[in-house]
Length: 153
Image 1: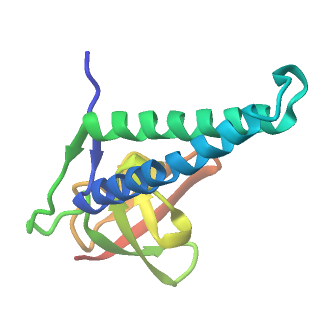
Image 2: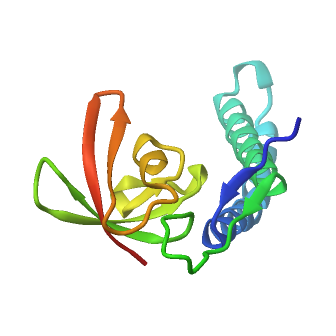
């Protein structure tokens, strides 16, 4: 069974950009490895060991990101008034009266510091497919809480 990773078009482009940046850095890392190898005895060559490890990490990251793109399901925004991937949503948490804005994104794109919440997080699951004016209960590991959807953009 193939599992497709849902993401926004912006998230897909971000991964493409990261892959391009990593591939651009690969020749430099290969040169560092070659220079370290030329120093001699590989069994006690710390520079060689570090350069080999760093290149391995870079190549592993590229493979991981390429697999994410291979199994990506790009979800376009729909103008239906419901919370969905790619949309911004204004939320009022019922324990305080502040309104916060989040963008609902795929798992790979989630970053709360940037206001991006994953559609499959407890908050994301609670608000998905809901309209403005709806109050939902979020079932989080730290305890349940309520949030009201103020606006869907």
